[in-house]
Length: 190
Image (spheres, rainbow, N blue to C red):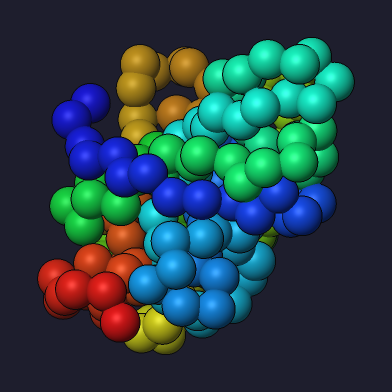
């Protein structure tokens, strides 16, 4: 992988856990540098959370972590965010191969879904691995959906997620509505 990672901040009072791979949004303004976990909305993304470091009050030392647990520090958290407008990601889909809506027939049996935008769903992250539980949800042409589907993930054959007609299959996506790439056009922060 080759992508840019920027340093952002999580306010020490932010009690929402943020996991590696979660989409994040700017807090109040992109100029503050503070982020929070994204929810299903049309707000512009700050990027994808890729880990953090903070001073742990429980461990009395600096901690590097895949995720922000939502507590355990009296100071702001240094967060690392992938915000490269050209970055591409593997993203898992909803629990059913037919759960993503917005096209007929299902996007998993139809190439017309490629190039369409999709909404995220938060899901449940793992405190054991620190990895995100976010997944692809509603697909459509809504310009302010945060991601764009660019390919299916097929291999290796028989691997978990490689059957595009099954539950939890994987797709390749890129930003659609992000600080540096708004609605498919590369821009600067707003």
